[in-house]
Length: 80
Image (cartoon, rainbow, N blue to C red; front, side, top):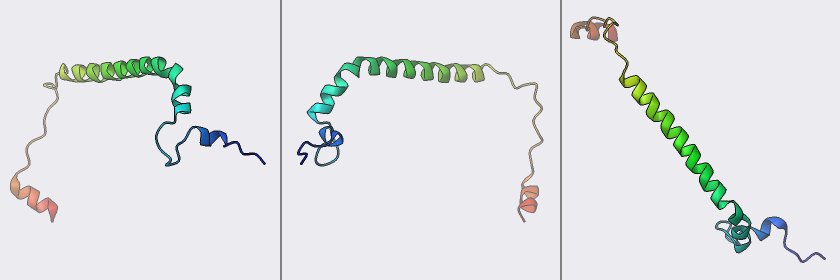
């Protein structure tokens, strides 16, 4: 009989969560690359978000005509 644990059991704890020492050793070579990737993605998304906010702030909507305000009695009639 095969008494060796399966490959999945080597990397999971008995409770089903957390990192076993084997999983920590396996992930160790990728920590720096993963952090650099995270930093790059956060920088990109933050810069796109900031650019879009700044682009909207500088728009001038003064040439667009606004509709006339609706009177209170018209609002009540439309909701009935």
